[in-house]
Image (cartoon, rainbow, N blue to C red; front, side):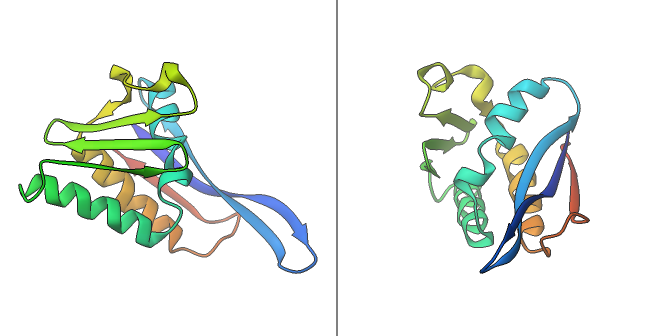
Length: 136
């Protein structure tokens, strides 16, 4: 599975100038629809900043080292339930996207995605800014 993080032009505004939108998409692999909905589709909702990514990564670490057994996080109509079995992603705006087996991922998958998304958020916003992420 491979992801691409990139910026798209959002227009020019008088006060702030050129605005960019950060995007995530599945660029190759199987189960692309699943990863697109439950991973790429929620990143901007749950981790808008490097600090937000760091908080979620801390939750994963806490579960991995045993200091926590379960952590619920997320935001903006997305809930992540993390425990030793992995991360369950629930998109609360649609009942069909809550508690679904296709919303379950490993802690390691989410760790890799969040680490690279945090890196991407630290890069300058431009059309040339691209980060490619390959899951193990």
